Image (cartoon, rainbow, N blue to C red):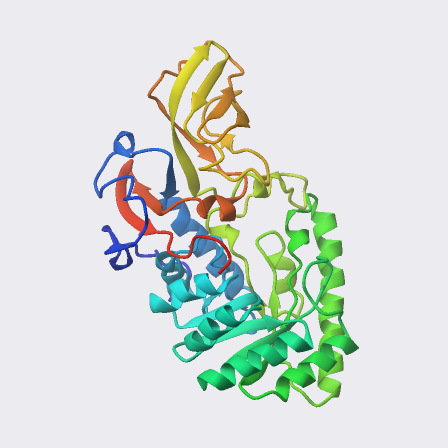
Length: 397
């Protein structure tokens, strides 16, 4: 597909929505106006989403054919959006848990990478079953994890691609770079049911370092660790087919490194308030992509002139990366939340905001906010155009 061509979105409820087992029905119907959508609702500006998809396709194409995009579907947990990303040039998707992989494979997504360690008999059995239905990959960072994964694959008669995860600075999962990574890669390559696929080298904490200089320094270090690990593995006679990682905050650095061959950026489809706090190289706004995901809220109360209360609280918006920001009301700030309420301080008490009015909020962190909702409501020209279930939501099973 030409990266500059428009992305087609069908103006109807997707086939995946038929019979969707979500507890809650959709908050709208196709053709509804904005004011007819029940709130709280997770709103997608379809025009902005399409522009983000095209922009990323163009960015990746500029790296040349040696670098490919495998966007992280933990951001949206939606096979419908995954299909749009693949149509725009992605080779497949990443997910972070078996339940997300299940949702993708069940919906016909044929190339899925669980960019995480999978531990536990039940999860491994489900992973092995999925590996018999699609091209599947997973991470390991410990010999015991590799052994358990091999046993599950042997029992199911399946084979799975395996990436050795290295810690490139995030201080989370990952074997130390270099010789330790090479030793684990050699073990993986010798185990039945496992196919060594390369290195997983994702620097998650670098994504939200605010200055361009900080992000560059973190990724220079990550690239060095990935390259060192590749050299150690190749010295054992093992090829390293792929080095995968990167996120929305740093993908241009990994993409231009001549070391990374696959980019896992995910939040670019939506963006969120926390990414908006990053700064570009000139000190200006980090504005490669647009905000396309919003929380639609209703004003429940105007108890005093300087305060409004809306129906987006903790149950509708994650606050791990700060509260949502208010769109289009000068001086308005979302200042506190409880389960069902969000308190908004109005910088101008005389602002004309009435009970029943609809407002838009930009989530602080898109991934966990999406996980709180059953449905996306896709809107264009102030009308509901599509309804997509959040098929992979829920805890990490």
